[in-house]
Length: 284
Image (cartoon, rainbow, N blue to C red; front, side, top):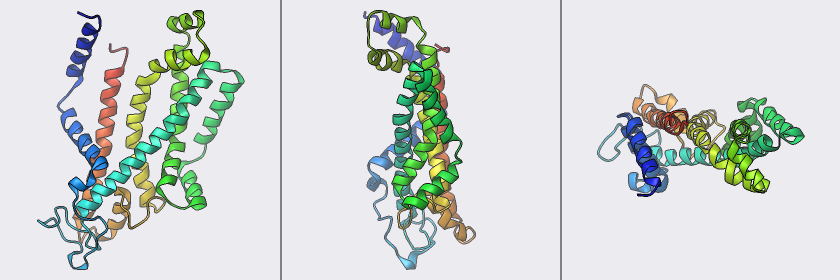
């Protein structure tokens, strides 16, 4: 029997211990979101932009499973394609924030000195700018678009990744296995990316998972204020903005995108909590 087998069995036992009944619907919902991102046509065969004035503000029916909006467009199609755009923006923004923030935090924590001080003070300067002000500045300069949303959200999250990585590197670089790598003559690049970096991944994974939920909420808020995706494209925030006029006439129009947004944010938050418990070294 290999030495990896006991460790693998311990991992599976820990997974079984931490898996609660709540994680079953969470996993199902996240798989559904993955399907929405990869193949939205499978769940929404109708066009999200096709208008039919005769069918405007209809309730759920056999033709329109979730009803229609003020232009007679299928709410199911708009929720699916809007969800695809919302999730892709959130994933891209968090990925970009981690891609920039993690190396900055790694270098600042490892070398410290004036270089680390400059890097971390730059992160503080970004945090000092209110998020809504940064969004208005970027949208006013370049116009509302998916790219501007991604850059704005990434700028808000980059300091979080940098600070988290900075603290992790400060703790790990003093441990014996890092000292052993240095004593064996390993260059700084090897110590940073092969020795220190793998040991900082668990908190970064949790931060990314929780960050996706917050990024989706930020995107919805910016789109609701008219600073995000513009019609005729759809995101859940934009659908909430358009539906507020028809709260009494067509309540389903408000409930459906709000419910999808709520369930998605809740699922990512619960996944982040589960990963935090799973990857916590003190629990192991």
